Image (tube, rainbow, N blue to C red; front, side, top):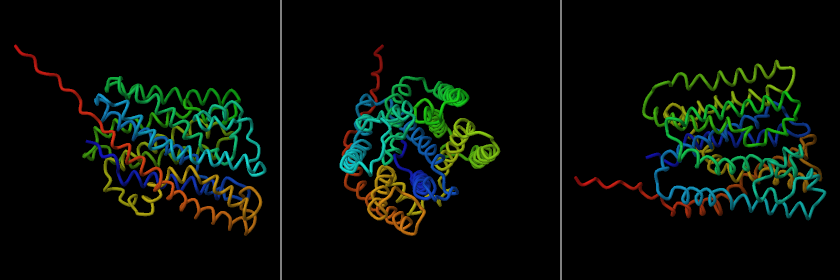
Length: 363
């Protein structure tokens, strides 16, 4: 039976969480240091990891008679309450402090409550309320949770990888067509179809895990693939004359590299014990809450200390960023401890029923 928790995968989640914080707090703002702009790669890693974990879980439990009820109850309790708390509080603050909220670009507040904000981001060509802008990734994941179980439960196991490869290819083709047509990256990158290759790559890795677990097959390939993928993506991206590469093929290369890295960590955890460092696992354990709150906390810290939006242009702004970093980790841990962990534990009370075994025929 598959363990629901692997320390090395928590470490990967922690790395991605740190990369998002570094990108949003140190790079993607006025006066930022572009060398810390790892956010796009981190998002792809999160998507691949979701595809891997959800795909592996579904393939393990899909024979359970109560699969759909248990799956959706557990997912809802694990992800939705913390999300709604943060969204409601942030929307309330935005209503009370319109100068802090800024221009929402026509993205309605209710779209965040229904996990449809990514559709409005693409339609309006804006990220809406800045402090909730990263939540488009959570909308993509929730939409993925709606479709993936139905496909993976009823699809014959031998067809899962071919179908996932087809989805991967269709997603890449969609991005290429949109980018070459002159569409802004924001008009398509927040959509599920545009990120389906990363999720599909995770599902493929999840299927391969069942074949490779406990073996040393393909270890060298799994070790080399992330480095080769990253090197190609970064090198070609630096030489490209437009951003088409970054918004199209680069994401697919990151997905392939991340899938290989995750699969290697899941198959041979002894080879990557450094991922089990306590600080990485701490960040991984609390990554969901930290990801939810890191932008509103940064906005509030800079508003109270500096009186402006986040930037790194003055010593006082750096102080606000330091305060925001500490506050994000502390509050994020509190949200995990008080909301996410208790509700996740409650969700585990909804256990998986054993598959029914057909009675033998009597001659």
